[in-house]
Length: 188
Image (cartoon, rainbow, N blue to C red; front, top):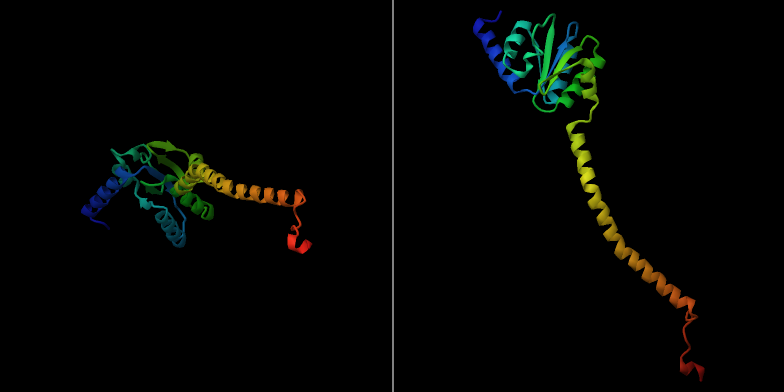
């Protein structure tokens, strides 16, 4: 059993973490196996988040005065939280993937940028492209006009060379000058 000082340290640590986060997803885990729990924790960590199984009273006390206060009040049953201060989409994707594979792991609600969201909105969040994908798409859109200009500028000399080549061929063979002229010495 933990000492009171250890519990207070855990509470203070969780309060500090919740004060910094932009996204918190409340879940239930009753019936999840140790293997699935390990997989879940690794997945959340890879997405840049944290996952904790919390006692309801500790979660409520830690959330007081933080953006997560609305989400973590009046908790009942077994609860866990996943949270991040980076990319909410990556966290939602990681949790949704686990929820599909492990039926015992279920969403309760979420908090994104200070707004409480429903289970359906968590699913929608998971379907959004990740931050990296969005940056990639924006960079492609910004790069596309420059790429088109470069292609058009490179085409000018090539087209000019083709046109000159075709003009020479047309002039050389079209005017009857295709055969070499006989030299005056050969005529004698």
